[in-house]
Image (tube, rainbow, N blue to C red; front, top):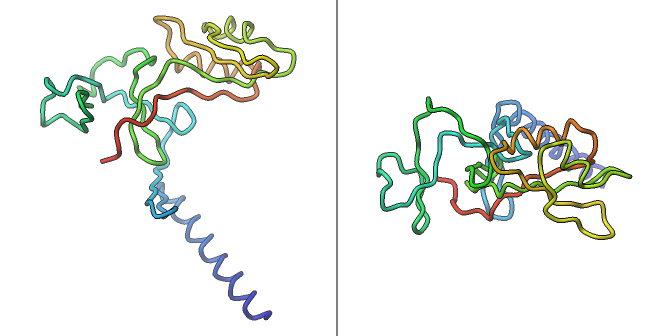
Length: 179
């Protein structure tokens, strides 16, 4: 009985060590529920989402085949000039899930959990956003980026303000699978 426990403990430690080594190599791969998950250690601007400045959404009818990354229905995601000026991050900006590699777009909204005795209006005023919705009886609110403002700057201002406990950027449902 004790030998079985010792073998199981040793195997668990070995698996843990191999996982740690994989993470140290900037890449982690695992099979979860029959799906292969691969995570690259990237600097994600919005939690697990990384802004893809070099990608743009265009109608698939005008997308150049040699620049097309993926196509879903009438929309194609294409590579654009990496040296082009980086635009404002906002509604419709393409982001990549750093865990699954899937591409999606930002909604321009941020869901926040407010600190005690803080109103959604105070957070919105401090960060250049506007209140879209407040859930009555909770400390949860949804803020919307104002037209022409940068969502990344506003998201970072929310984190720095200390007025919230947690904040999450909203994305549309996954539209494009990893290639």
